[in-house]
Image 1 (cartoon, rainbow, N blue to C red):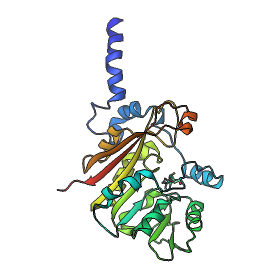
Image 2: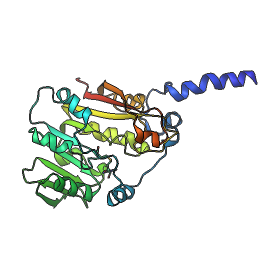
Image 3: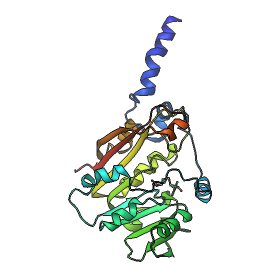
Image 4: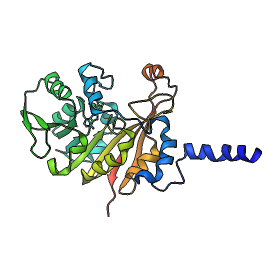
Length: 270
Ligand code: SAH
């Protein structure tokens, strides 16, 4: 009995907390056991697209922020790296006001969002006239553009989007995106994002750390180890900032620890 207990005490915490012992989490089923232990009860959570659309219909959009996101504002110089007129990609864009902020600074923006209501609200709330047209390459999709045509929002499932639509991007702002897609889709998501990165792309990624057994998400918990296993083989990853982001909102979710991490991800120069 003593040796069994000893084994449990020694092996389990390592398995749960470090995620080590698995060289790559991005190899699908091979490391499922490890992923499951890292992500706790969230590993198999699935949110259907219809549930997101329902949230928009019912105005249950607590993730939306009326101000430009501090992490984008604080790190914009690192993202731009001296460049002007950069083309930004916003995966899972919602109606983020960050898109208007960047367009007003002379950049262009391409976003993808499943909710038509979100896209229409974005243009209406920012007093922009907009047009709407089908996207022949993506059945059922529509693209909405402001009159200056420097903001293009695609209404479709992100996983039907590709670099054949708008080419590759010079920057990506990922807030409420990697943390919002289903945890089981992360490898597919990382492959898509990497395929959308131009050689000089600077990808700003916002992740959230908390105990996934206490709250079901979204937003989901994304450990730093997984950021590295998803992007580390083709990109350099720098943790720019880590801060305690616990507020009453997360306390109501049942959490007493909640950390926001911001990573700068850039393609490895070969
Ligand atoms: N980035 C935005 C929105 C975050 S919430 C912000 O920071 O405010 C996630 C958004 O992604 C929701 O608006 C939801 O409707 C949308 N969404 C979720 N899964 C999607 C998918 N597979 N394809 C396109 N949009 C999706």
